[in-house]
Amino acid sequence: MPTPMYFVVPAGFDDPGRPSGGNRYDLELARELDELGWAVHMKPVAGSWPRPADEDRRELDRILETIPEQSMVLLDGLVACGVPDIVAAHCGRQRLVVLVHLPLAAETGLEAQVARDLDHAERHALHRASASVATSRWTAQQLTDHHGLPGTRVHVAVPGVHLARLAPGSFQGGRHLLAVASVTPRKGLDRLVEALAQLPSDLPWQLKIAGAQPDPAYAALLHGMIAEAELDERISILGPLTVPDLDAVYSWADLLVMPSDKEPWGMAVTEALARGIPVYASDVGGVPEALGHAAFPGETVLERPGRLLPPDSIVAWEQALEEWMCTLRLRDRLRTLAEQRQRTLPTWRSTALEVEMALRGFPSTPWHTDQEPEEPSLV
Image (cartoon, rainbow, N blue to C red):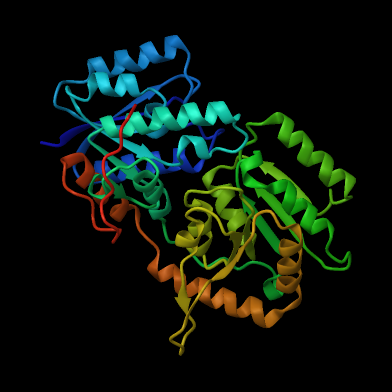
């Protein structure tokens, strides 16, 4: 008989009009756990998470009350980490495991006091939970170093990929740039537009931006910047795409660009590499893990299948993109490295197996060598 597992997620996690890396992760994980023999019960909860209204808190408490005692419960951190009192109230009744996509205080644009409050709440919630799952080693390190969680209770389950056909891209492979990201300040798309506006006008390039637009003010700012730079014919903001349409723009792309301020992993990075597409991305968070390394055929030195760039340097992005567009030999080498990296990408099955260990109460697969931190005071 399948083992029941209850997965508490934000309402709308399966809405195709609101795609995000976190939502995609939750969906893929649920599907993979189901294939491993778990009876997965999805429990979506509405609310302005991670800062819910009182009625949202009551609904989450009610949902947890309806789950049988001693059950295994996985809670998306966006829901759980802001309500440590609710986690504490149920941690004795059920085995509660919290899935952390991005530490709450790491979100861009938070007021200082709000960030401190969320950070404090998250620390308490994670210490009350039976275990935590981080979606990158970088995030796991934040949970051990900053929140003082024992490393054996922090499981690293990086996002998997579905391998795809190699993307054909454009002729000579330098013209088509793709950004797969929500149109929000954290994704740094305004700086990307500024960098592209500085390129020589005779360089033939196009940029497509695929992703939800949850921040109307930022989307308007971005459209205004594109118009002011007279790049309307070169930059297209596509909005959220269906899976077939997203596959089509990946096939169109020569280079994935990700100029994010903060990124716990960067699922678009590995999605691009799964199609043999090189990546230029910000050197932040878990992005270096996602980009990884590969060896050029016949060589032994490991190289990046792309470039890691400072997120706040428009000049660095401009220079890197110009070099990319003007140097065929560089493009060919990075393309080959991306195709080699495709062979070593993680799978969703490996993701689910690590989450399964957390649910069953096993120590995490070793991911760190540092001495375990002492338990901090939670006052």
